[in-house]
Length: 338
Ligand SMILES: Cc1cc2nc3c(=O)[nH]c(=O)nc-3n(C[C@H](O)[C@H](O)[C@H](O)COP(=O)(O)OP(=O)(O)OC[C@H]3O[C@@H](n4cnc5c(N)ncnc54)[C@H](O)[C@@H]3O)c2cc1C
Ligand code: SF4
Image (cartoon, rainbow, N blue to C red):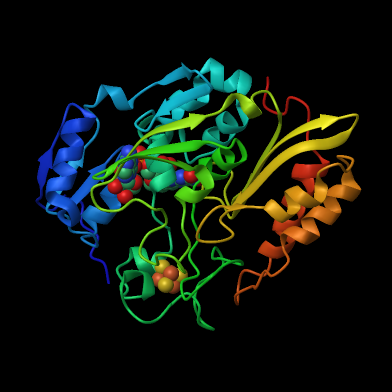
């Protein structure tokens, strides 16, 4: 079991001033190194002594990783840009308000002031067994404590589980998938650009992490193409406490309508599985259909096909069905715009 202490353990702290310097440190120290962004996930792991890196690479001094800029196609957001900056940026509010809304619903103002967009999409799961240091599958053991008759699994997965039933807790991830964002990663082999949906992995691919980053990799930029700028957006998050809390489920959609029919659409949910899920079957089924409650109803039913509840999370199935239904049939004009 974890011992919660209020002081940091000792480690070597390095504070590079450039991406090149950070990358060279990460390459040099590989598995011994830990990337520090805003620290909101990081500091729990370190203080609880569950993760014990020898060297912590603090990105806060790297100016090139900060800021939101227009790009030749859309915009670019540096990985170290805070969630508050994302929420408040005029270009994001005007053209990509889906992301502004998702980021505005993350945690509390203090956390959004410190937490970064790169950290938000790279954060680990909140499964309390794992975070408390229990030797479960994700921690290298051979049991899932949450997936037992007595396990506390109210917040856990209903889809795509494989030994581990933990979920990805990010609110910005599904919005970035709906916006067809690209993630730019510096790796020891060179730069790699991946679609947002391919940044995340389930336990069947890698049970030890929620994303594709390997030791030595650095997420530098998130690019949002202009293609979905100004679409009709829908974001909804359901949580236990509306003041601030992780999502029990969230949904994000972007649509273009023509004569009341869905011409183009992207839709994703998170906290239903270990990775945010793009609902491609739903997108295909609703394209060309009227954006109304009947289409939403059909989409909601399709979205939850194959869902398997655990002992205490069956509520997530009707919840997901209804979120998807509203995201398609109930797209509200300017829900966020004011
Ligand atoms: C009390 C509390 C409530 C929260 N509620 C919510 C919520 O409701 N919704 C939500 O979405 N989130 C929530 N969060 C998460 C929070 O919003 C942070 O965004 C998130 O924890 C990590 O962001 P960070 O910048 O602090 O990164 P850190 O904690 O420093 O990093 C997180 C992880 O990402 C890695 N990492 C960070 N940046 C990079 C990079 N550029 N390249 C490679 N690896 C990187 C780090 O190594 C670490 O493993 C909450 C956090 C707390 C503590
Ligand atoms: S859900 Fe995953 S992280 Fe949680 S106890 Fe089970 S294996 Fe570990």
